[in-house]
Length: 170
Length: 372
Image 1 (cartoon, chains in turn blue, orange):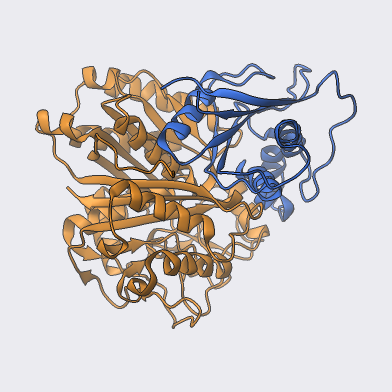
Image 2 (tube, helix red, strand yellow; image 1 turned 45 degrees about the vertical axis):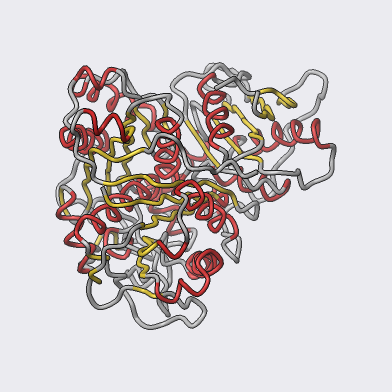
């Protein structure tokens, strides 16, 4: 099984595209989903232009070692207080939600997959995610895979970072 | 070109371990699901006094999530007759909820499984909501089918905890009446359940060479997306239908050869209807005489572990020739129109059984199983 061929890339932040992270309507309390969506958007625009839907069967594969920690903390805090958990946190309580947003916007009908690699270098796609993308392509459920690697800012002051690669069989 | 040709190497299941609110091991799960003995009760693990819904299907005794996963992986590897030398070459795919404890649980599973089974840690963690385990099984089957590995251990675990319970309650996803009634008139939502499950997926020829028991064959698998919404299913079940079609194509099976569907059937008004439409699209008139049930009505919704738990139910149904009851039934929903297994288990020996799962983000997985 050859490694996948990279068709396009998008990232956030990107020195060539200054500006803040755009909010994502319907998502709250955390930068994670906006981060994933913006990297994906930049990657898909780079390949397809601004016109959705994208042709063919494109899978979505999100790799995040840390996951959406801000949402997880908000849910745990609300639950521990005994108060009602903010309803918007229900659907963003798992990483599939933002993938559903991207899939709906771009018409991506391939598999929707989320993984949590043991280690990740922010701004880089883990090798395991590329291996899994290659498997999805070889197995025939997708013609292309949008691989997104996203890590939220941590307590050490590292910023939010995400990179998205659109790949096809090599 | 869909790329769903039957594989040269057929994956089989040679070991299975399971733990759920109905008990320990496959026999307890088979007995409860066949007869529709629902395991729901009041939640006492944490305070639910300010929640709309106060019921779930919980393990009788408290257990740490990593310990539950290690229990079922040990069951599966013991049944498969694997040695520590076998374990060293075996990838481990693990499905867990993504939260602040994911990394800690993974590390505990890796350490425990390394010591007990000889595996070299956890290879990959799947966090993709209610199809996380279904995706892991499909990927394991693909890894075996393309010859990358002789065998793969797939495990999953979910224990009901206050955060996710509170989020599902706030999202009005839980059944207001405290009963999970898949495809029924008057259904109001789902109920959560504890579960851990594990399977050893192995290349058929390798299992045959070493004389391993074949519990079931993974005849086909499929994964597809709805491209519709962050959490609502596509109303006609488009992605679910394509996942099933992919699984049938890989198996080289005709839809009429499928004799049981273990449906996703969460009890959600919208999702159950979309799933019924997906089954109607794939199976046509055969859906009128295709026995269908959702065993979530007995063991609850185990989220990231649900697809593996329900694969275990499906394998037990084929093993025993008893198709599980769709519990919680109040009466027909005229828009659903499926041949639901009601009142008692249906005796049958179908050639193929289908286990279907769907999740947030429009994710769908289908696993097509044949008797071993």
